[in-house]
Image 1 (tube, helix red, strand yellow):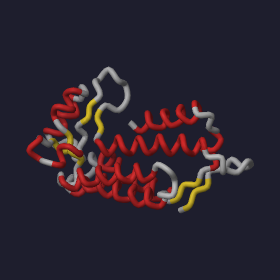
Image 2 (image 1 turned 180 degrees about the vertical axis):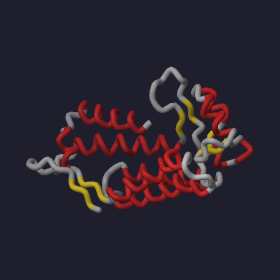
Image 3 (image 1 turned 45 degrees about the horizontal axis):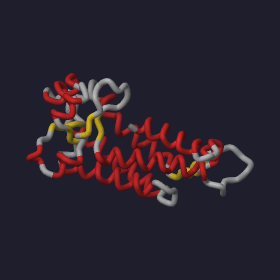
Image 4 (image 1 turned 120 degrees about the horizontal axis):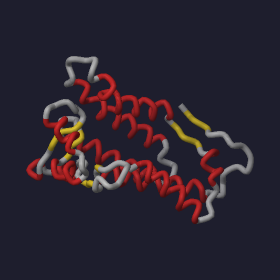
Length: 193
């Protein structure tokens, strides 16, 4: 979903006569937090084969989401980041309501053609997702319940929070491309740690 958001933002910026070069001049705060968040998100996948006690590994993606929220807050002056913040908070809420795991539905997994993922969630092999039903209340609606049919090659399952994050990212990219206040010279991304 986020790859599509990047592409939509770029296309919208180009169509609206934005400058791709502006993306090279943007300032991003909290790069170390972003890197940490990504590492925390993927760590259960990497560490699961090597660690016997998997219970605490399930917390890593949730903590990664919280770290990403901190990075988003550091960049809130950029347009689109409040939309990203709302999406990230909704994802964190969904995980918090579901034992710190991202809720998914069996129906959405089947619609997306992800039967193998469904089986691994059911047998406990995948620890960062949990199956929910409509009886689970708010977690059901905030989880990854939106599915794209399997004919689509990229991400097939996403949440309302993912949609908002993607919309905010696309808006940020196209707005950055349209920004007239960037320096005329220099082509270096500035990171603040």
